Each structure stands twice: as structure tokens, then as C-alpha cells.
Length: 161
Image 1 (cartoon, rainbow, N blue to C red):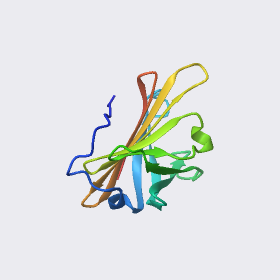
Image 2: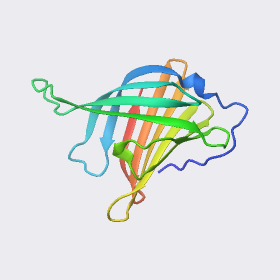
Image 3: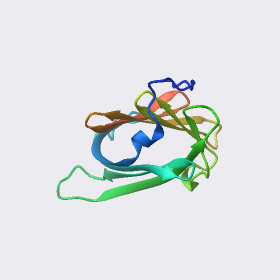
Image 4: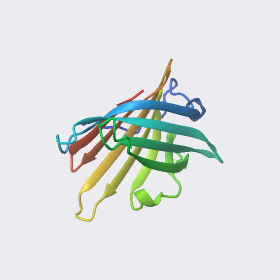
């Protein structure tokens, strides 16, 4: 489990505009809560851009439902979140929660070459869930790493390039 600490922006932190653009790639997802599903490939389409005084992140994930080449059924998940400056350097807060994350706290931070978006919520049973998406700029584009932790147990890891 990785912890992210919010600190004042450092001189080497890139500005949010460095992340603006459209990124596509393929990643490997491992569901850790059950080994039955194992590892699978996902396709990603991410767009980050200017939105008023802040920015938006819009992404679509395409899951292949079956590993059988004869069954090409896919499942799409899309989300768009708007962020505005929080008043703390390098930290942004979500403006209007998407219905999928209603009741969750959502924020973004920039550290070095990485834009981290975190969503934390409390489920009906009082459990805590934290989803973290690290988007790191590289010479070849962007690398995405995501994780999902529920009640301090990691449930999902994703790596995409």
C-alpha cells in the first residue's frame, strides 16, 4: 500500500498544463480481492484539459469481458471530473461530484512529473475505500498506475503505458 502526502509544490513540479492532451494505451489489471479473475488487459483513453480556472480529467476504460477470441464482448466505463485550485499550491479539489462518486472526497495533486487523483469514500457498512490514479509524464507520453484499497486491504492494481 502506498501513501500520498500532500505537501507544498516543489520547484521541479510541473504545471497542470503539462498534462493537457489525449492519451491512449493498454494496461494490465490485477484484481487482488479474488484470484479467480486473475490478470486482464484493459484499453484506456484519457483526456486532460483546461476548464475555466481549473482543469478536467475524462477517461474511458474498456474491459474485455472474456479472454476467448471468439467472444469480443467489452464493457466500457467512463468518468469526467472537474477540478479547481484548492488554495494550496499543487493541490486541486473536485467541483461537482460525479454520480458514481457521490459522497466521496476527490482531489488531485501534482508532485514532480506526476498528477495523482485520489477518491476516498465511506461505504454503507462504514468501510473506507481509497482509489488512487497516478499519471506520470515520460519521454514517451504518460504512464498510469492505479490502486484500490478497501479497509486497508489492496484490492486492485493497474499499470498502463
